[in-house]
Image (tube, rainbow, N blue to C red):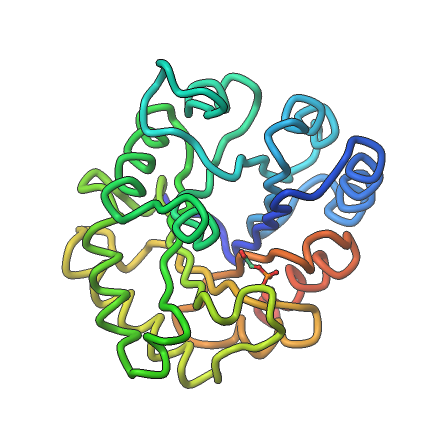
Length: 253
Ligand code: PGA
């Protein structure tokens, strides 16, 4: 079974100390109430996961981590293994974020190994792909997406355990977004590739990420094959983040 739509996930990145994070999560918990028709998740820094498990207790908010190592244990100073994240209360993990690909030189093979480790540990894998600005300007977006999809997604992927996030690198944290037509084209392409490779490819959640805010969420989330959003900066404000989630609820749902 795939995740309930909209799927709106907040990547806090390297932001948050206990005090402000508790207040933000409490505010979001109040807005979310006891149940949701869609999927709402937060991805705090690993240092907060233990506490955050308590903060979201009794609420439908999903708790995830921002990255994991490909191995379940070993001599990897500073890294965190997927089973450790699972044990501390995370049920999902982001892998292949462009900031990891860029600043930690992670290629598709590494991302795929991490995603496999996540699945092995029972975590939902949120696998990020997206073209750079140079690739976008050269008209190479779809080629790049094809390569990343092929290289980063484990063969064992299915709609219940893997979500794909399309995040153009040039749209992350910049305030710039592709047009709705460009997003539709990329998401339609990703959908076709998923359908060609996986029996339930039509059911995978495909998220758009990159400068999603309350102001543009309705337009972006209404695009075909956009099942939700991966939100960075705007997820640091509970009201704004909630407004993005609400914008993804289909009229009448
Ligand atoms: P942004 O980040 O919303 O701040 O652009 C998105 C992301 O990196 O997931």
